[in-house]
Amino acid sequence: MTSATLVAVTLLFPLQARAQGSNGLSDLFGSIFSGQSPSPAQPAPGPGGVQPWSGEDGASGHPLMTAAAIRGAAANFDNCIASMWPDAARRNVTQENFQRFTTGLTPELRIMDLLDSQPEFTKSIWDYLDILVNDNRLAKGKEILARYKAQFDATEKAYGVDRYIIAAIWGIESNYSTQIGDRSVLQSTATLACIGRRQAYFKDEFLSALEILNRGDLRPEQMRGSWAGAFGPTQFMPTAFKRFAVDADGDGRRDVVDDPADLIASTANNLKKDGWQSGASWGYEVVVPQGFDFMLADRAKAMTIAQWEKLGITRATGQPFPHPADKAYLLTPAGAAGPGFLMLQNFRVIMKYNPAEAYALAIGHFADRLRGGQPFVQPWPRQERELSRAERLELQQLLAQRGFYKSTSDGQFGGQTRDALRNFQASIGAPADGFASSDMLERLRRR
Image 1 (cartoon, rainbow, N blue to C red):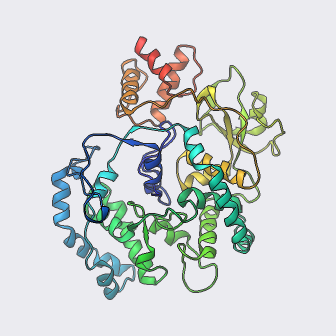
Image 2 (cartoon, rainbow, N blue to C red):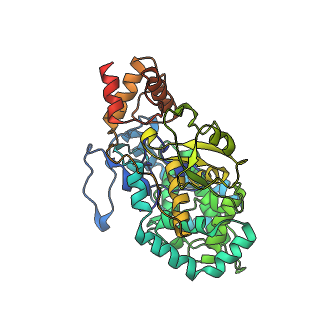
Image 3 (cartoon, helix red, strand yellow):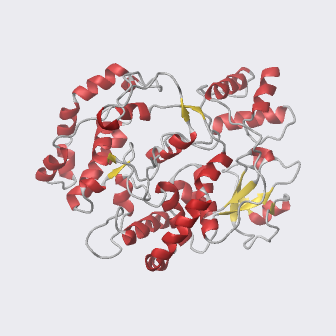
């Protein structure tokens, strides 16, 4: 599977990052990094190996995710689809094609379980990087770069986007087209447009999918992908396809599935329109000195690299920074015990492709490795383990009891939880790095 329901590193990754972002990775990171809760038990696969819907209420507690609401919406599915004809007509979809592409559509209710799944356990960022940036994927990436050199050359000239970044996205999103996903984009987006808690969002995706088919860019059998509707080797959502897909070879079709020229150029066009800076790096691995104020490790606190140097930040390789006037923010994904990174504008652009810092770090690092760069210099704190969902929930509750956390305790970590943890760490004289370790949980329990 290649799309993301849940993203792995609890303190870094928003839920359903790509399904809510510009493109759409919707199952990959969940399947790799989140062990699903063992209850309720999932039913055995039905005919053809298709997993049926559990029949249970969704974990979000949303009124549209109750079992009764899901069954009711499923019973009204045909009417829901038919009601979208006027909207499709306004998008210049012909009535003939609307009937052609929607006749026989049925909802896949298993998607409701995926939409509302919650991780019981998560993987660490170092495990994440180990899985996605490995020797086998690097070898495949170098083969792709050689095989499509002409297309990468033309794309770099036209868009000014680094070929290694495009190759890295291709490799991490679909392992170079070998793990694209096998669900019908029409069925998935139609299901989500008519059932569940994201109907408005996915109605636009469904109608955009109809536009793509109506125009003739792709055939229905090409539009297969994730449960959230992402498709193709670099996982475009239908709305993102409309914004960014290009016909690079002039054949009249924007084929981001089977045409390497269109795929490479469309991915580059996406990055370019999101603000990619030609010839610039995504960031640098850095050494954070002892006694550093980790309250400065915040995406909102960008400074020039020269200013970071004055605070004692140095490159892990020992080399000088090439552009001291560049602005960057400091990321410390494993806290004070792990490596630091100064992140530049292009890192933020990668995050527009998938709004998760760990994803963007994997893309940037994989691109550097494809270019011939070396692994990260500094070790990760591999002795640390990720907290379970029950432990994350307990940590939030303890922070709330002690007056540091004001939001809902749900076991899902975001900026508010990280800030609360930092303030607690500062109150006990620990490095305020916001890293949720088992040791920090134990300290909270003792206070």
